[in-house]
Length: 179
Image 1 (cartoon, rainbow, N blue to C red):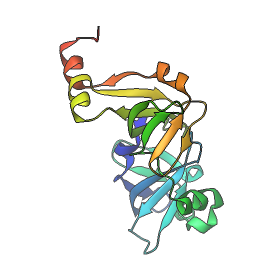
Image 2 (cartoon, one colour):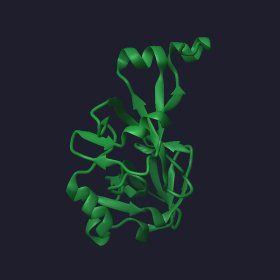
Image 3 (cartoon, helix red, strand yellow):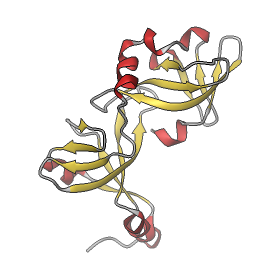
Image 4 (spheres, one colour):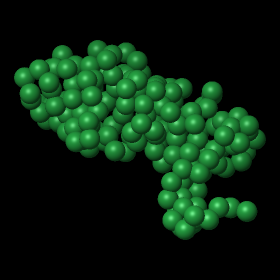
C-alpha cells in the first residue's frame, strides 16, 4: 500500500523511450471512492492537462511512477470516466467525514491505495491538530458506501466501529492506549 500524498509530486517516466513526462499532480478516484482511475500529469512534455489511466501504469516506484509509453498519457476527453470525475470537481482528500446520523468522524487526510490494483484500501483520518498530536491519525477501511459531497462525505453510522488507530501521536510513541 502507498499513500496518495506520497505519489503526488513524483516524476513520471515513460518506459518506452525513457522520457520524462512531468510529475503526478493528483490522483483521479472514482465517484464511489473505491478505485484510482488514473493520474493527472503536471507539465513536462505537455502544455495542457493530461491524464494517465491506471491501465498504462507499469509501477509506482519509491522515486518515480513509470508508465508504458507516450500513448499512456492522454487528454481527459479521451477517458470519459476520468473526464467525468475531473469535470465534477470530485475530491476526497480534505473532506469532513460524518455519519448519516450527524456524528463527525474527522477529516479525510489521505488515501491508502493498493499500488498493484489501484483499489482504495482505506482513508487516513485526522481529528484535528491536538487530537492528531496526542492520538495520531485513524484509519478507516474503505466502507461499502460513501457519499462524497463538496465539503462533507457521509457514511453509515455503523462505519464508526471499523475505525482504528493508524499512526503517530504521543500515545503511539509512548505505547499508551486509550482507557
